Length: 321
Ligand SMILES: C[S@@+](CC[C@H](N)C(=O)[O-])C[C@H]1O[C@@H](n2cnc3c(N)ncnc32)[C@H](O)[C@@H]1O
Image (cartoon, rainbow, N blue to C red; front, side):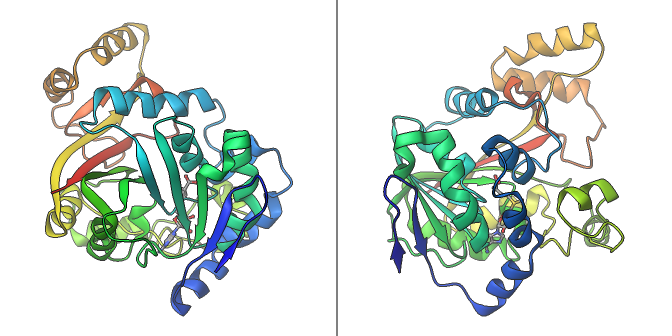
């Protein structure tokens, strides 16, 4: 069940059902991992975690995002034992594990090649001699091989919208979380007004030619977000799934970048310094009836560390009750 390399991230093999194994083996990321494994760590991160579309993003900014969340949002801070769901090569897990208050992070990922071929290199890049603070788990986030009430916080970076059954995933997550523990999601939430048909249309959107090339796919063959294993969840779907599975719904924020002309940027920069509840009141007036990329526009706050992120992010935090 266990294989360990000296001074490197430990890798665990968790049980994975045949259907998910097949899906993971056929996923474009299985071949992509092999194709990029000899590249520089930052190139791998940029390609895998940010789809190669955030060239200006730096490690310092990403670390800053967690400082921002810790300081401005979380009522219980990031500390103890963490778990990342759909962790890719464990880049975000490593950033979390780099925090002195964080003891270790389990990084669960279904695609074997990502964990084996890229995980040790990426965690070593971020953590150096502390790489053993991340445990790469080749497994299913719906079948967590962790004890009940053993985890302090759970993290998701654009992965939970790959869960075909959010309720099931959150039930398992709630089981392993300690009371008062929380789930921190940087993910997609869609507008509550969207119908099932609207959501279906979004899933049937085809990737652009450029994206398919970056994904290592044949650009002439159709590939949709649905084929990539994605799902679409409205804010109300997230809320329902959390509430039904042992969580208090706590907070949702739409994290926005400071954009626009000089004057607008100045105003938004000023707003970004205010407490979040005041920012929300101001942006509610400023963004009345507006949408950004079909994302829920409510609770919009300006978050300086996401300035160079490729897209706006929804932040959802739910505490286990
Ligand atoms: C959009 S990617 C995000 C990757 C990662 N969070 C990062 O920062 O690079 C979603 C990831 O979730 C993984 N995934 C999807 N379903 C999973 C499951 N049931 N169990 C574990 N990982 C899963 C996919 O293989 C993919 O690597």
